[in-house]
Length: 367
Ligand code: F6P
Image (cartoon, rainbow, N blue to C red):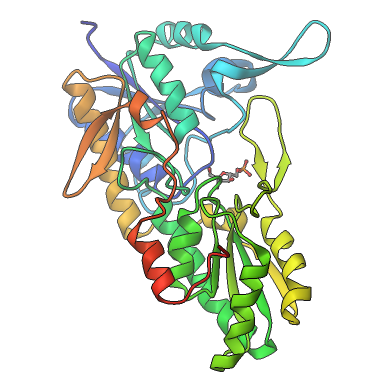
């Protein structure tokens, strides 16, 4: 077995609160075990596009470089959701863009820079790449990051709790203005094709309707639920819409599809507001929380699991593991094969207790 001396860490895909906490835990616990640590800038671009980094595509990480970052949002390494090395957008000789597999080049760059192992922080896309890197011979450990919480085989991903907490706070603030104007406030939240953020913030924030990708909605049923409210003395409504929500027989609102990156979603909230307004005889206004959900300091819960995930990733490498993801399985963390974690998306199970609770409380899903 190859002896590990130098460990690289990278952050890929959309940023999520807690990334810096994981980086700090990885760096400090690795140094304490005698390893050297480098950070790859902007996903894998620091290695694949060294010409773009006059200061170097790798950051040498010391205790000092990670001091005081646990509570900070973003990532000191930078990230990208356009740099999938297995599908790298590349210009062909005919001037057209195509997707190129650059994973062998990446492995060669690891070897050239003396990198013996990798800790990859990412969502399903980034951890799929981590799995390829592991299969190509670089010991690799994945750490589950995403505000969407759509990664399988872990109870939760880091970043999700912060996103839900902020979305709930925003919904709380919208109640008073919605009530003052007797309006319907439609709140669109991120989450891609999973409804976790919408469901958890909608129930916690006392929404009247929650529309999630797992339950295609009928706008007439949403409207009927809202029309009932005044009979109980409530003259306004809050509708939380996941960005991936879709009407029965329709599809999600896709803004664009670009080479080498996931589909961009947007407009689900506006679509609901537009269709709802004539049916409820109330002004319907839309608020898109969007990237605000990715910003700010991680909650205590996210900080703690991030630190636990980071330290557990180094323990895994130290014990000779590879091709696994650190997963939360309270009260402990465990390791699951990256292949299993990335096989399918974790969507909201329709039988889950949060959906049942919402229904018991009279919240409509438009079904
Ligand atoms: O996966 C995290 C996420 O924030 C999704 O909820 C959202 O659809 C997407 O990233 C947005 O990505 P971008 O930063 O490219 O707009």
